[in-house]
Length: 276
Image (tube, one colour):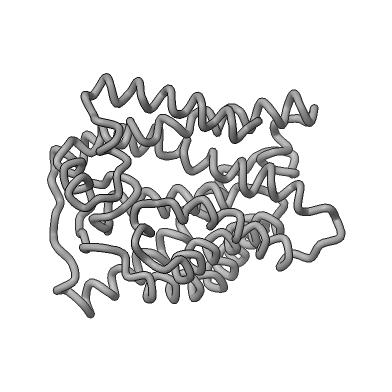
């Protein structure tokens, strides 16, 4: 019901936004290079709004189903603690940002020819409206569904953390295989890359029994992808400082796997200090 409602209402919202901004839906969601190049000539903020508005139903339907079908308090979807900790969300955001900026910065220094300086001031500040409204809705909606609804179903009290996280990572990776940047590539490396990220976020959610770290980290990932380094074939529009032609899935998969223990360790350390 959540998925069907998300797809139907999300499509209606996307069609409405595309009509308002004058976009051709067939071109907007095409994986053809010429169509994608045409879309990139449009303002990133309006393209972002057209794509991201479809996640509002996923956000709302997951919450409504949890409250009225499972008959559980909405707070329990976010956290099992007495109250939601924004400080822990910032820990997730800061940890992910630190890791991504370190890896990206190092690669820019080592392989400068692979990056193009592409920052445009006017486009950047216009996009911030979308980055601080619809983008957090998109990332939080995915967390509520994958690390909230699905993970609570997977965590039956008998499965170990690594089992729940492994299954959750695969479930998270599966729909991302339809992203434009995956098109034309073998699925193994993208599956490892997205799966490792899903595993990592599922692990800390299981460990802490809350979505706080995962919500912050997911937003950091998508925000930095849009504003710091992006690829020409990205699923989301961007106004990034640097661009690369396409995702190099081999290095991306390696970085995603290496990032898992670092993120788990870093969030655990910071969270322990905050608790003290």
